[in-house]
Length: 469
Ligand code: URP
Ligand code: ZN
Ligand code: ZN
Ligand code: ZN
Image 1: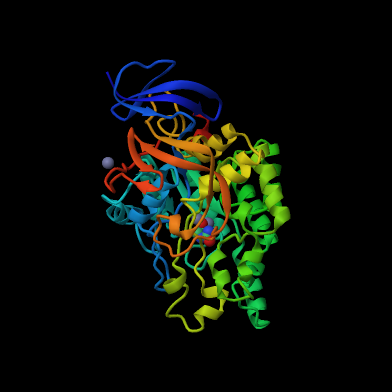
Image 2: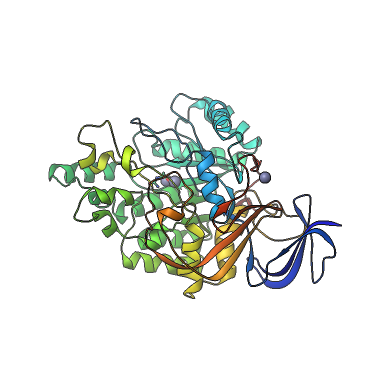
């Protein structure tokens, strides 16, 4: 006897689309067949697509910030929002603060997450202080303990690594078989541009975008790729915003390099014009993220990349700050200068609907490709496959039931995050996640989060498929 049978399922994976039933026992898929037999509970999926639960491999929750700013979402509200948006796994970042050991950083982050997760989680590390001790002992120990990916930054005062440090981290990643995620924007070029703009009195949120044009991202992307070539390590370039950095990634991929790439909803649904707000006012701060959204030609380029394989994963880069009380408060002149606006926007709940609507409903990408970008490839790239990221016997029973016909206008009133706005307010989408199932349990349905904040498990990860295992 099964615990659960999903009947009338139109199952979509990265490779296929089949009509079948799914049998579940103890939170795992034990059968996929025309008829899986009797179960204690039947779930009817008639008229809906059954997809693997979404995996958002790039979210920031409760990440310590400089300047007294607090992130709008901790684990509880962030994973609640993720569940409502069709996700069953999210991967936030355990930030190493300067002077901190990796163990301290990870332990503090686990403490923050404890009993506060509606979905499964697994942590990347952010390396900001690659001392000999960190590189020689701590990082290898962390990889062995299942923290098999880390992010490095080529910009931001409190996080930037210089080229030598990048190379040292890459070298550890090669030896330990860890995936490095690179934030590719050039620190000095941004500093130069920001000073020039400030001297000209151009300080509105919009000038955040002008302070870091595509050339800045292109240069850093190329530099990261060259360093990866030198150290012979796979890397993932995260949050790629447009054609220029894409060309660098395509160049690397054509040469057979193990370079992977991520893009995000803001680069298909927003442009730099959104940062202008109503009339170059502070409203534009709602769209400040890095790299900034570009223009319509860049959006077109991103779509080409989502189709042709330039991009491997599609993540939200959910990084929420409250508009009302956190946009640089306590800083003199904060509300008039883009340099004080914390970088990042919310999006974990809207990632899947935006890509589905703009991509699948408008026939720019197939539904199988949608699954690949949003669940299967993230699982493969970060060592969660095949337990996560697909629908197969032996995998966790994580599903998103998708109504491809449902029309919804995105609005803050629908969101489950603790941010006080959504940058996608008013965006009409077709296709919506109507039920989220985590290891057999329905954790969200029709906009209601039904699970508990103790449902999410912490996932220890294996090695990225990028290492050919
Ligand atoms: O502006 C952004 N994206 N903030 C989040 C941190 C990061 O760089 O991903
Ligand atoms: Zn970043
Ligand atoms: Zn990010
Ligand atoms: Zn529960």
